Length: 242
Ligand code: SF4
Image (cartoon, rainbow, N blue to C red; front, side):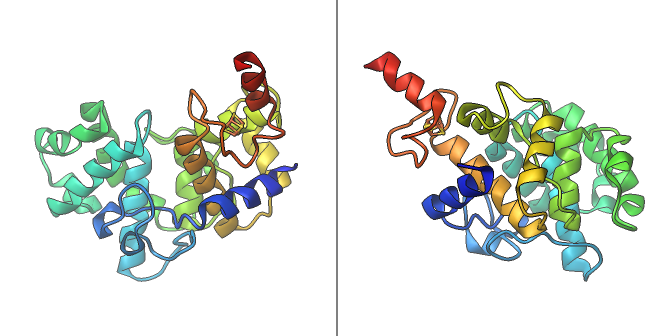
């Protein structure tokens, strides 16, 4: 089974995911129609009206807040910032450090993330003035490869693959790219083996994350998994337990 078939099987199993979730519009973890721009997943894209621009900023904030934590906490923090009426570059910059950090507490390491979000707000006019390059984003504070790729894909529709820890775990267990692939190796593999369509890549990322959370966890729940009959990792567990 190649990667495109893996994504197809996940789509059959879970249905459209509709990422990126926008907590300010009611979208928390999981699929809630009101919280997404379009469904299935549809990147925002450059330009557009104020609603599109505000969605891009919210996605970038969410991508930073999701670093090293579960989306549940990050989404609560985004929702808290939105409820406080400061989910904009100006709103962030006009908010005192302590108040901003307190709002971001659910995302963990909230004082550092408050500084990251403030840095994002300062740079946002330049970031959002055109479709940024990956190299440019990687030069900014708080942007590692995963955050940069989330922003490129979901904010600007650049056809990159977000090779987060969930995707790498599944790739590794399915034996697609060897054991414990690096971020860049997994990204290159996926981009070489999937259609370079932003909406497709967004949906693929969301489906892999969902599969990793529901079944392919640290301790996987292989019973009922669509890959159970041929997944090397799943089969090795079955042999050990037999
Ligand atoms: S069979 Fe188990 S280890 Fe393999 S992909 Fe499915 S849940 Fe993950």
